[in-house]
Image (cartoon, rainbow, N blue to C red):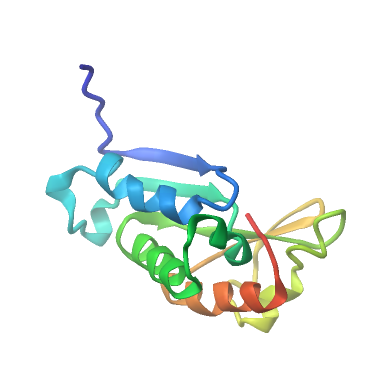
Length: 143
């Protein structure tokens, strides 16, 4: 057995086609050391996370909207230093994850990072519920 030092992880990317919440639940037992079940805000060991967030797709893994919201809020509060959502301003994915969602759910990040065709908004833990509920009602899938 090789024991990895997972005290500080800069970046995690998850792409599991609707099973993201199930995978994140599993990370609590693998990426997070058991002795750190309560991680102080200054000692969060995951820097950033990139994954698809599509509440309408969670049914593949039998994840209900409220359970997904609770899991994302818990992870954003207790484990990840930063969380972002990528919203589209043009291109093929604009309809599936439009930038207008940021205003609709009143995200606090009014100055997102801007790249060609996307805006990357920082998400606060208390914003997961309105964001995911807004995505669910619009049928949006975002990263």
